[in-house]
Image (tube, rainbow over all chains, first blue to last red; front, side, top):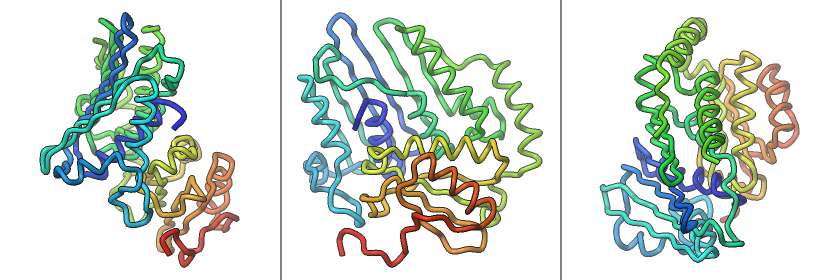
Length: 179
Length: 131
């Protein structure tokens, strides 16, 4: 994975495949320490303890069409390369929480990438599900809550291009004002 | 914390789009619409399926084509990512491989608009990696 935005897209696919109706994505940077925390919480079907032990094994997958499952192992690798870590908590029927911690100032830190396009892709292809995206840098931050936007749109699809463009522009403008 | 709270903006957008969707009546009759499924697993994302998906969503709208774009898991053709499955109303699904934005443009223009098959189709009986 070239950058963090691809990782986010990839890990959220796991949530969607687990039948999650609501996925929370939280990206939080603390500039004094360079600590960057990515949290992805979902209300999908979760995993039992046995599966949980095996998920960072690249040769473990639930797919029948292939023999590898690289999403979480790659995220873990990229986090650990910066001196960070990656952990997954889950229980059967209780959803899943993925936490990856990076050191932003480390030479091996991957770029952030285009978060707006990642969100746009998720909303466009799964507009009936709820996404809560929060992005914070120290005290600043912004959030995109698709459940809230959907209620404002009163029946107009979130997957309309104008709505998607509106949301991506909102994300880009806010990211710009945070730097 | 900034939020999308500019309700006036969203309402304007809603009013504008409501007139548009009335003409289209999306997803009322999914069997009658073109369905495009972009594979979006780890292998696909690493090969650029996000860009392909965005391009298809934007272009179908710009070219006024009624279609449902969704994502699907890995189809097992990891060597040919990004892969895109297109289901035209009343026809068998067709899977295209190596779909970058250029290929996507060709698929929209030729296959979706005029029903002309383009190169890059993965035959359905093609061997998957586990076979």
